[in-house]
Length: 341
Image (tube, rainbow, N blue to C red; front, top):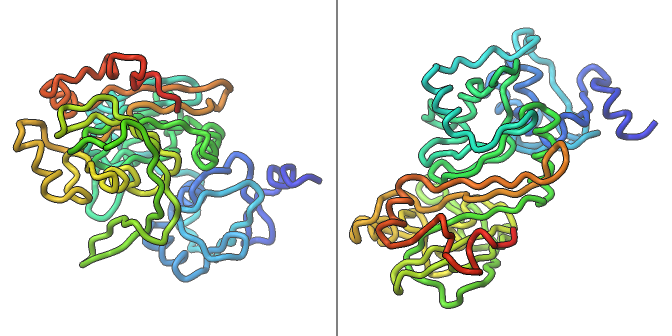
C-alpha cells in the first residue's frame, strides 16, 4: 500500500496517534486541533505543546508548523469536553459580514481573495478582540463552512489576502506558499531613493527582543531575499518602489527597505522617528505605506490565479500629493504592472 493510500485511508492509529491525510496537508497544527478538538482551548493547547505532550513524528513542535500528508500526530489524553462533533458557529454581525463582502476582489467555488485594509489583524493575539480570522464566518456566502486562511499579512500592511473555501483548496494554496510558487508584488513609498534603480537585497534575519519589544534584525538567522525596482522617484526625498520578496520572513520588506537606506514611510519600528514623522512634516498621509498590490499563484482547480488590489486610501492620498499615478503604474515600459512575479 502506498504512503498516499495509507495517509488517506488511515486517519487514526494506535488510539493516541493520528495520521495527517492529504486534505489536511498545509494546515497549521493548531488549526488541525481546532477543527478536530474545538472544545480544547487555546491556553490548554499551548500548554500541551510547551510540555511536549503533543508530538509530530516523535518531535516537539510549535502550533504554527504546517502539516504534511503522512505525518503522525501524537495526541495526549484529553478531557471529554475537548472532543465535540463540530466547531461552534462563529458569531459575526451583519455589519461585519457586509464589511468583509465589500473587501472581495475575487470569488469562485474554491477561492476567495480580499483586499485587507491596514489596521485589521489577520489573526488574534494578546489584547486583540477583532481580527479577520474571527470574522470568517461572515464569508460563508451560502456555504456551511467558513473559508480558511492560507497565509497572512502584518496588521498594518494592506492588500491581497487569499482564502481557501474548503480544506482541499486551502491545503493546495498553503502548499504553493510553502514551496514558494507564489509571485508577490508589494508597493511602498520610501523615505529616500535607492542608489540603483533595480537590485536585490540578500541578508540573514533573526528575531531579537529588547525590553520586551520583539524586532527582526540583520544577523545569523534565516536567509532572506528581496528584489526591488524603483517605479518612480520624487526628487531625492521619496521613491515609489516595487518590492518582490523571494522569501517570506517576518517584516522582511520593512527590514530590507531600511537596510537599503530607504525606510518605508510611516515605519517607526525600522525607520525611526524620521520615517514615522516625515509624511506628516511634508503634508503626506500618516500610516505605514506598504501594500500587497498583486499576488499570482496556482489555482487549486488548475491554471493561475492573478489578483490585483488597489492601494488603501492613505496611500492613494500620498500618491496624489506627490503626483504619482498608481493606475498607470509608472506610465512606461517598466510599469509596475509589467513586472515579472
